[in-house]
Image (cartoon, rainbow, N blue to C red; front, side, top):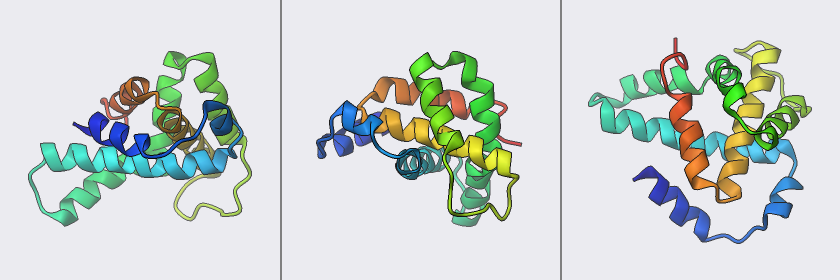
Length: 143
């Protein structure tokens, strides 16, 4: 279901893989953040029949910087060399903002994770993106 939606949505826009690699890591993280948030919200709405306030509280456990940082560290050995490079680029990107509710290292790793999600989305690697998203919400990605 979710893979069909993002596959169809991504199909409306034409960008070559080389152009994706030339995007700034923070741009990849920008789109990756939205894709991951949509995945988590979809998962919760389908699996947890509750009110919006509770859905929001549950989603924060997945999407906050600490959870994303823990996730990327947990799955790093399952990433390809190219994917690890995207994470490193995202992690090392200099952001103009300073996190208010996160440690700087967690914030940087979470940016690397979001860059990876954005990269896989924009390069139309939907099957691999779904693998990463599923790994991300396995036990251990929330407190």
